[in-house]
Length: 122
Image (cartoon, rainbow, N blue to C red):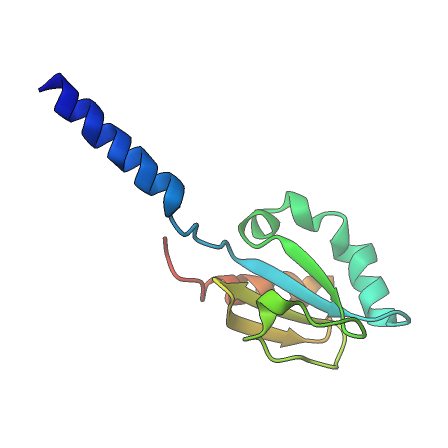
């Protein structure tokens, strides 16, 4: 009986190593930006430093993307935008919401909260 338990445990471990579970991808807030974008600079000055320390930043970490560089392969399902800054909330590589432009710090947070409210509950 003990041998059978060890054999089953060994088989389960082998299967896990050969076929690891597909980890769920967390939400991300993409920030599409470009050099010389005054509104991007303003966002970084007013929001950027604080963002990672906020509840919003923990729920959807920021990922900066320069629109003039190669579009990341893992974002092939996300439509490229040329307006900067543009904020795209993604979850499991699917677009959830998009905000074009930076409306200032007083409006950004409520708009971001509205975007985050559209994330699926887990």
